[in-house]
Length: 140
Image 1 (cartoon, helix red, strand yellow):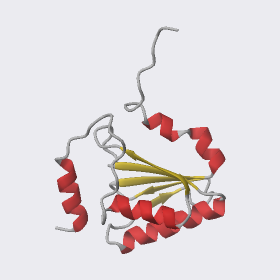
Image 2: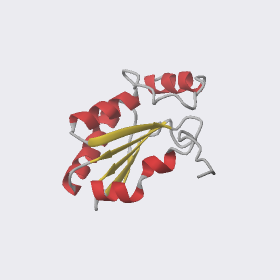
Image 3: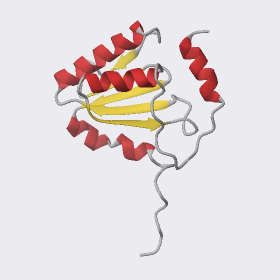
Protein backbone atom coordinates (compact mmCIF):
# COMPACT_ATOMS: atom_id res chain seq x y z
CA UNK A 1 0.00 0.00 0.00
CA UNK A 2 1.46 3.40 -0.97
CA UNK A 3 1.72 6.32 1.41
CA UNK A 4 -1.13 8.13 -0.38
CA UNK A 5 -3.40 5.07 -0.11
CA UNK A 6 -2.59 4.71 3.60
CA UNK A 7 -3.48 8.39 4.17
CA UNK A 8 -6.75 7.98 2.27
CA UNK A 9 -7.72 4.93 4.31
CA UNK A 10 -6.96 6.64 7.62
CA UNK A 11 -8.66 9.93 6.70
CA UNK A 12 -11.87 8.13 5.68
CA UNK A 13 -12.46 7.10 9.33
CA UNK A 14 -11.86 10.59 10.77
CA UNK A 15 -15.06 12.44 11.71
CA UNK A 16 -15.35 16.07 10.62
CA UNK A 17 -16.28 18.82 13.05
CA UNK A 18 -18.24 21.57 11.28
CA UNK A 19 -17.02 24.63 13.21
CA UNK A 20 -13.40 23.53 13.59
CA UNK A 21 -10.68 25.56 11.88
CA UNK A 22 -8.99 24.07 8.83
CA UNK A 23 -6.70 21.27 10.03
CA UNK A 24 -2.98 21.77 9.78
CA UNK A 25 -1.41 19.81 6.93
CA UNK A 26 -0.14 16.39 8.01
CA UNK A 27 3.62 16.27 7.41
CA UNK A 28 4.41 14.07 4.43
CA UNK A 29 0.88 14.27 2.99
CA UNK A 30 -0.13 15.54 -0.43
CA UNK A 31 -1.86 18.50 1.22
CA UNK A 32 1.34 19.42 3.10
CA UNK A 33 3.40 19.12 -0.09
CA UNK A 34 1.02 21.44 -1.94
CA UNK A 35 0.98 24.01 0.88
CA UNK A 36 4.78 23.99 1.23
CA UNK A 37 5.35 24.28 -2.52
CA UNK A 38 2.90 27.19 -2.88
CA UNK A 39 4.62 28.99 -0.02
CA UNK A 40 8.05 28.32 -1.53
CA UNK A 41 6.92 29.64 -4.93
CA UNK A 42 5.65 32.83 -3.27
CA UNK A 43 1.98 32.32 -4.02
CA UNK A 44 -0.17 34.93 -2.30
CA UNK A 45 -3.24 34.63 -0.07
CA UNK A 46 -3.12 30.85 0.25
CA UNK A 47 -6.37 29.41 1.62
CA UNK A 48 -7.04 25.75 2.34
CA UNK A 49 -10.68 24.64 2.56
CA UNK A 50 -11.43 21.18 3.98
CA UNK A 51 -14.02 19.49 1.76
CA UNK A 52 -14.45 16.26 3.68
CA UNK A 53 -18.14 15.95 4.44
CA UNK A 54 -19.03 18.76 2.02
CA UNK A 55 -18.05 17.21 -1.29
CA UNK A 56 -16.70 13.98 -2.68
CA UNK A 57 -14.48 15.67 -5.27
CA UNK A 58 -11.47 15.99 -2.94
CA UNK A 59 -10.41 16.21 0.70
CA UNK A 60 -9.04 19.75 0.33
CA UNK A 61 -9.44 22.70 -2.00
CA UNK A 62 -6.51 25.09 -1.98
CA UNK A 63 -6.90 28.57 -3.44
CA UNK A 64 -3.96 30.88 -4.08
CA UNK A 65 -3.00 33.87 -6.21
CA UNK A 66 -0.03 34.77 -8.34
CA UNK A 67 1.00 38.32 -9.20
CA UNK A 68 0.82 37.77 -12.98
CA UNK A 69 -0.18 35.20 -15.58
CA UNK A 70 3.47 34.24 -15.90
CA UNK A 71 3.78 33.53 -12.17
CA UNK A 72 0.46 31.63 -12.08
CA UNK A 73 1.63 29.40 -14.97
CA UNK A 74 5.04 28.86 -13.38
CA UNK A 75 3.58 27.94 -9.98
CA UNK A 76 1.12 25.51 -11.61
CA UNK A 77 3.75 23.74 -13.72
CA UNK A 78 6.21 23.43 -10.85
CA UNK A 79 3.53 22.19 -8.45
CA UNK A 80 2.34 19.56 -10.93
CA UNK A 81 5.93 18.37 -11.40
CA UNK A 82 6.58 18.18 -7.62
CA UNK A 83 3.38 16.20 -6.98
CA UNK A 84 4.31 13.70 -9.68
CA UNK A 85 7.92 13.40 -8.41
CA UNK A 86 6.62 12.76 -4.88
CA UNK A 87 4.77 9.69 -6.15
CA UNK A 88 1.18 10.96 -6.06
CA UNK A 89 0.70 10.35 -9.78
CA UNK A 90 0.03 12.69 -12.67
CA UNK A 91 -1.83 15.96 -12.12
CA UNK A 92 -4.51 17.24 -14.49
CA UNK A 93 -4.01 20.89 -15.44
CA UNK A 94 -6.73 23.11 -16.91
CA UNK A 95 -6.43 26.75 -17.97
CA UNK A 96 -2.67 26.82 -18.39
CA UNK A 97 -2.52 28.61 -21.78
CA UNK A 98 -4.31 31.76 -20.51
CA UNK A 99 -3.14 31.34 -16.87
CA UNK A 100 -5.81 33.66 -15.46
CA UNK A 101 -7.27 30.72 -13.54
CA UNK A 102 -5.43 27.41 -13.48
CA UNK A 103 -6.99 24.30 -11.94
CA UNK A 104 -4.77 21.46 -10.72
CA UNK A 105 -6.53 18.21 -9.91
CA UNK A 106 -4.19 16.07 -7.83
CA UNK A 107 -6.88 13.69 -6.60
CA UNK A 108 -7.25 14.33 -2.88
CA UNK A 109 -6.26 17.99 -3.29
CA UNK A 110 -7.67 20.40 -5.87
CA UNK A 111 -5.74 23.65 -6.36
CA UNK A 112 -7.09 26.84 -7.92
CA UNK A 113 -4.45 29.39 -8.91
CA UNK A 114 -5.68 32.84 -9.91
CA UNK A 115 -4.56 36.27 -10.91
CA UNK A 116 -5.88 38.55 -8.10
CA UNK A 117 -8.56 40.24 -10.25
CA UNK A 118 -9.97 36.94 -11.44
CA UNK A 119 -9.93 35.50 -7.91
CA UNK A 120 -11.92 38.40 -6.50
CA UNK A 121 -14.46 38.11 -9.34
CA UNK A 122 -15.22 34.41 -8.77
CA UNK A 123 -14.77 34.48 -4.96
CA UNK A 124 -14.57 30.69 -4.52
CA UNK A 125 -13.82 31.01 -0.81
CA UNK A 126 -17.28 32.46 -0.21
CA UNK A 127 -18.97 29.84 -2.36
CA UNK A 128 -17.40 26.93 -0.46
CA UNK A 129 -17.87 28.42 3.01
CA UNK A 130 -21.62 27.66 3.01
CA UNK A 131 -21.37 25.19 5.90
CA UNK A 132 -18.90 27.25 7.91
CA UNK A 133 -20.56 30.67 7.87
CA UNK A 134 -22.90 31.58 10.73
CA UNK A 135 -26.58 31.74 9.73
CA UNK A 136 -27.85 35.12 8.59
CA UNK A 137 -30.51 36.57 10.87
CA UNK A 138 -33.87 37.34 9.23
CA UNK A 139 -34.56 40.27 11.59
CA UNK A 140 -33.13 43.74 11.07
